[in-house]
Length: 403
Image 1 (tube, rainbow, N blue to C red):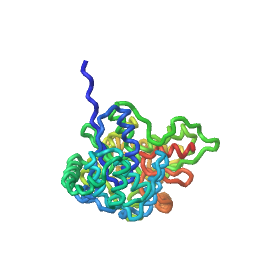
Image 2 (image 1 turned 60 degrees about the vertical axis):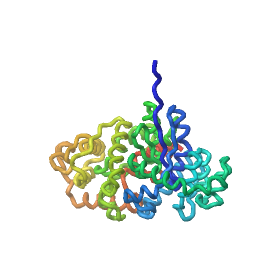
Image 3 (image 1 turned 60 degrees about the horizontal axis):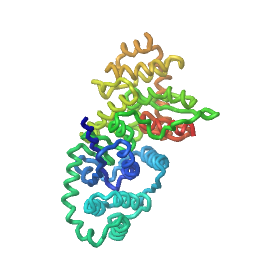
């Protein structure tokens, strides 16, 4: 009987990415669990950014609330994975020499971990000669034999960066499984499922946790125009049942929110072609993960203002069914949720009151309140004042609800 060949598993990284650092701490264990043929793939992130048109200092382009969320999110992941992390002064720091040294050591894992920890635990300039010497020596290599040869690895680093681009890599960390691209250490459960064919729990979600004696409130900010809000909204009731959480649904007009914080109306259209392709595939993977139907609509973007007003005009007892029906109509059935006839059907025959002045004011006020509370996109989940953005953070949300 022929044995199945091990799956090919590549980890593409640059030391300047904190999420690549977090991923580097767990990726080898993942490969061992999956029995995969694993390789480290260093590349120059700045070179990829230049090629795809991404700003070199990406964090400087974020709105203030998104930057604040990302900083908190990074620390949450570090705490979850049990690794120290602090943002180095002057980040992003130069990594070219450290990457070349890594290549000259044959991508020795001890060297890779040494440079990552020097950067993200100790805030060191890892391309400075003292740090290069120390990391190489501690990993068992002779700095005097490697440092004079750094220029020899220049072309190899360029070649690997070009190879990353050819594979569709647009950021770090990137995982490539038998040619299929995954981006972000928060997708490692999807990577493991791809490698093993087995379902893997959502990162952060407690395996066994009793609901707290005093149920927490879970606020869910949403707009029907977001595919990730559709995916996330469908998981909320089960999450509430497991945790005993009291759910408060918070509709908002995403376009109005974006305008108030200076965000592009359709962020997807600002992404590079490679990232847009990835997002499309990512949506399909998440829909499969949650076991829900999904079809990217032919009408995108779409105006959701009528649907949101209709939601607010309905009695509380009827809102849940309408919310689910609108999400499903747009993101699974490709129906026009800006059409009055479609909305009347989904609402049970009437849109009475949806164009009333007080309803219009209520939607505007809800959007302004969301912006004032630091919401910058949907879905956003809030637990005890702590904000989580994205349906891919539901594991962390559940952790917060039962801690």
